Image (tube, rainbow over all chains, first blue to last red; front, side, top):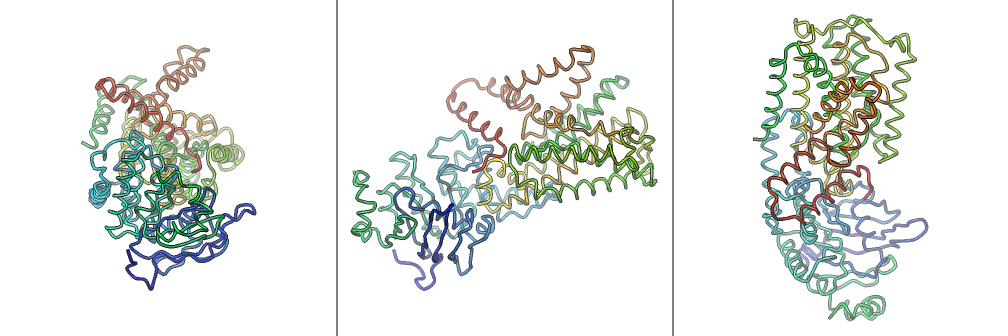
Length: 264
Length: 336
C-alpha cells in the first residue's frame, strides 16, 4: 500500500545514536515512516530493535540524532510527553497492571484524555462521575476493537497469556495514538492467536493508526507489513517492501539465511 | 451500590457508643483506633495504591500535632487555624521532600524516609525552646469547632469518628477515579504508566503530599484530644506500626487499612492483660496473619469468604491470578 502523504512522513528518524558503556546499540539509525503504513523492524538478536523502540519512546536519551514526529522534535522528551504527542506502545515483556481488571487497565490507557484533578476526585464532584462513565465507554470501545469485551471485568492477571498481550494492545489503542509501536506482539502466541493478531493489526491500520512493529515471526512480518526495516549491529542494513527485502543478498546473508526454518 | 460498605461501616461506628456509652474500650480505645485509621488510610494511598514505602510517616503526624500544640499554647491561635497551619507545613515539607526522595525505589526509599522520620524526631527532642524537648508540651486547649468546645471522651469519640469517616470517604473517592487508577498503574508498572501519559514523578509527589496531609490532620486532632504532646508519640516505632497496620489490614484497600489500624489498636489494648507476654503474643499473631492471610486480614478474609461461596470450577485460573496479583502487590519498587 502506498503512503497517504508521501511528501511529509509521520515519523522521520535521522542519525539516531544510543550507546551503553561504549557499545553502540544504535549507530546512526535513519529511516522514515509514512502515515497509514504497517512497517516491521527485523534483525538478528541484539541488532538494536528494542533499543530503537525505547529510544523513540523516551525511555532512553539518545546521544545524537533526531526524532521528528508529525513535524515536532521528540528526542530528549520524557515518555509521558512523547505519549501526549500521539505515540503508544506495547512491551516485549508484559507490562500489564496486574493489580487491576482488564477494563481498568484500558481506562489507564485513556489517561491523556482524563481531566480529573485531586480535589474534584476526592469530593466526587459531578464532573468526575461523568468522566468515569466517559472513560469506561472509551475503554469498552478499545476492548471491542480487540475482541476483549467479554473479559472486561476479569482481573488482568487471570487471563491466558495470549489475551494479556491483547489487553496491552487495547490499552495502547485507548490512548488514541497516531503511531502504535508493537514490540514482539506474536512472541509466545500459538498459531491461531498469531493469525488473529495479524487480522487485528490490519484492523488497527484500517482505523487510521500507523503501526511500527518489532517481530521475529517471519510469516506474520511478511504477511502484514507494507515496509520492512532491517537492522544489524545498530545500523540500517536494508529498507523496502517485503519482496525486495527477501531478495536482498545482504539481508539473506545477515539474517534471513538463518531463518529458513521459520518458513515451514 | 458503590458506597454500601461505607454506609454499613458508618452505621456501626455510630451504633457502638449508643450501645456501650460508658465502655472504656469502645469510647477511649475506639477514639485512638479512629485516629490510627486516619493515619493508615492516608498512608495506604502511598504504600498500598502507589506502591511507595514510607517508614517516616510518624513525622507528618508529629508535625500536625506540634503545629497545633505550639500555635495554640504559645501564640493563642484558635484550634482550627492551627490545624490548617499544620496541614500547610506538613504538605509543604512533603512536597519539597517528595521529588528527591521518591526517585528512590524499594529499600533505598525505605531508608530515606526512615532517615527523614528520625531527623524530625531528633528535632522534636532537641528544639527545646519550641517543642519543650523530651518533656513535650502540655496545656493544649480543647478544640473549639465554630463555638462548640469538644470535651469529654464521648464527644472526642464523635469528632474522631466523623474525621475518620471523612478520611475513608475521601480515600474511597480518590481510589475510584482516574487519579486512583493512575496511582495503581505506577504501582503495577511505572514503565507502562509513563507510556500511558502519566507523569509518574508528579503522581508520586502528589500522593506523598496527600498522605502527609492525612497524617497531619490526625496529628492536630491527637494533640487537642490528649491536651499534651511529646516526641515519643512520633518516633520510628510509630512509623513502623503504621506500615504494619496497612499491611495487616490488607494492602491497597481503604477499608483494609482502616480495619488493620483498628485491629492493631484493639489488639494492643486487649493484650495488656498478658503483661510480660504482650509483645510475644502480638508478634506471633502478626506472623500468623502474614503466613496464613498474606493479603491481609480484611482483604484475605473477604477473598476466602468469596472463594468459599463459589467453590466449584475455575481452580487453575484462580491460582494463576493469585500468584500474579500478589507478585505485583508485594514488590512495590521493582524497576521495569
